[in-house]
Image (cartoon, rainbow, N blue to C red; front, side, top):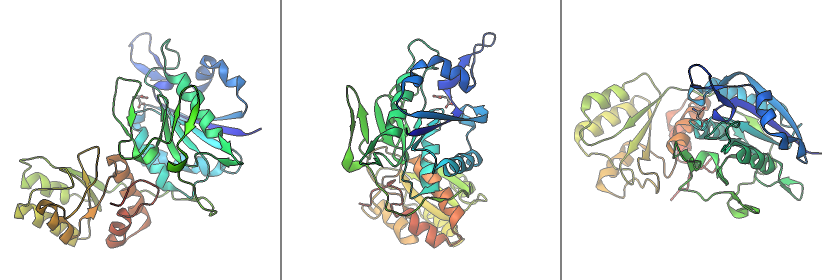
Length: 339
Ligand code: ASP
């Protein structure tokens, strides 16, 4: 019989309303199990690892990502797939980070959670959990059907590093506008076979070291030299710059000079768009030509979540900013499409 490891980190799925304060607070996994007797009926064995500290995912951080990735590695040979119960707020960040940390992944790592606690009458948690387990357990010709880090939510399976939390109040919490969904569940569970990545024969490599020396520069008309300089001069090694449209910025000389000084001092600047759909095309407009010339990295159609975690991952692997820049522009785990 196949085995699935459920790793419980926290999130609304396992929360209950405090009788006095009325705020939602995490509960332990046994209480979750009590709400899902269906777990007994599955045709696979379920093992559970509950984190010592159950958290709201707004408290997620790279240390916990390392712990999570290490846990997956240590159970990798014993189980057929993983389901990670996680709050939806930062789920796309954790899924993106793990996609980079787990190189050559050949087993499913399926993140899920819910918008309503599992004990709520109209909860979305049960469907999300049961189908996530089914996906983690799905095989064809003895091979996992989805050997990727994914998010399963509201009947859809997304590539983790292509998704972002889009809606805080509907069950349809996630979107992946620049990449097709990998599976959809309804009466049948249908996989989009041609969109799913399959690794080669190489073994899993775990990369635990993420470096959080990353700043974010979000542009807006009227941004002042003071604000841009403060961000670029922060004590960091990488800057994710959220630009307009197809990767465009002001052409004001002070702005280009500040970016150039930062790059010359050894910092890496990555250009991603504030648009959720479409791609950065450095050099298409006059307003991005100079960015390309001074050595800003092209983030193509990466999500913000993938951009930040990929930067942390590469800074943890490499000292040479030129190498970091080169690899930021390469599709490492299906996170971008080079156009
Ligand atoms: N605040 C919760 C969390 O991210 C929201 C959720 O689980 O959906 O932990």
